[in-house]
View 1 (cartoon, rainbow, N blue to C red):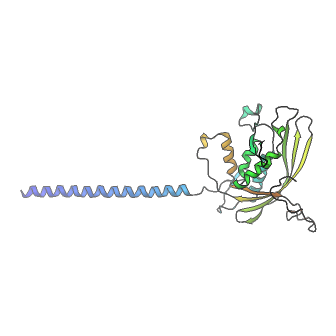
View 2: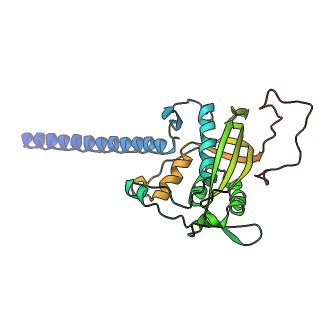
View 3: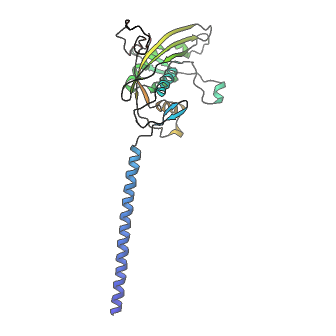
Length: 273
């Protein structure tokens, strides 16, 4: 009888120990799950590393999220404005097959301040995503007013093209953390496809640029060519906040006659002199 009681006590002790060990193991696993969840959440909230500045095709890493290389800013301005004001009437080729047979650019309708709507080229619309959201809408309306309808004409005798010829982009001047002022001297050349008649308009502008965040395309493999192009524009982590007429007599030109003054009162509403 005594031996039977001892066996029962030993069995009860083993079961109790096993239950306590199992419960402790469950608590440990739950704690590890909670810790892993917190780590995943921190990773999801962390900003992507700043490897987006490209100089001569090579990424430049900056520890400061608001820091940008001067050459990267100048390339951003040049690339954006060339895409914005180079109109060929055709879409950029996406592969070798399209190089031989370019697709016509049907354009994108933009509302104008007069209440109507006019077309801008697809390249202009994509490049406009390099502008800040509050500035983009008004700028697109101005670009639509500047874009001749002949750009989209299927009649070769009426078709026109446009190209922005950049003469100089001045070194960026930092005006605040993550904000720069950049001057550009260029000409906007519009040309008839037949006959070659040209209209040259000075395009001397002062850009206010600021650093921005960027988040990669979550569905890069399923994106359209247009979506990929837009994400590529935003990948520079820079955006244009304002465009003014450039005064060629300001501090950009060290040899300028300081006794002369530029015309005042010109705002970002006037993009072409």
